[in-house]
Image 1 (cartoon, rainbow, N blue to C red):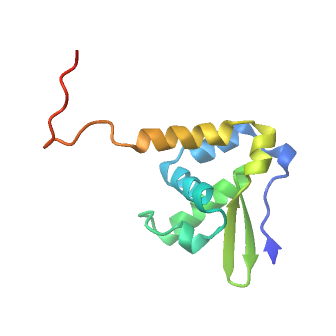
Image 2: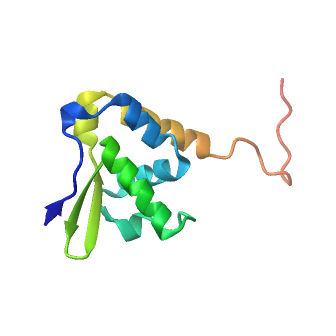
Amino acid sequence: MRLLPHPATEDIELTEVLRALSDPVRLQIVARLAACGELTCTVAGDDLGVHKSTASHHYRTLREAGVVVTKQEGRLKYMSLRRDDLDRRFPGLLDSILLAALTTSAPAAAPADQPTAPSA
C-alpha cells in the first residue's frame, strides 16, 4: 500500500481547505466520505455527473488541500477524510461545513402542487 502525497497536519491551511470545499462536487464527495468512511475513488465518484478526469481533478484538489488522504492498493485508490487532522487544526470546521451543506441542500419550499400554510 502506498500513500499519495498530502500535506502534513501542521501544513494544512484554512484558505486551501475552504477553497477545496467551496465546490459543490467536492463538497458532495466529502459528505459521502463523512457518511461512509473510506471509499474507493470509483465509488466516491458514482453519480456525481462529472467525467472521470474531472472527478480525478476534484480528488487531487481535496488531497492537496489536506481534506482527504488517498492510499493506493494495486490499481485501486482509497480515500478517507482527515477528520482528526482537520479537527486538530480547525476545531469544528468540518462539522459546521457539512451541517451547513446538509441544511442548504434540503428543499426550502413546498412543492408547487401542495398548498402552503398561510403566514401569520
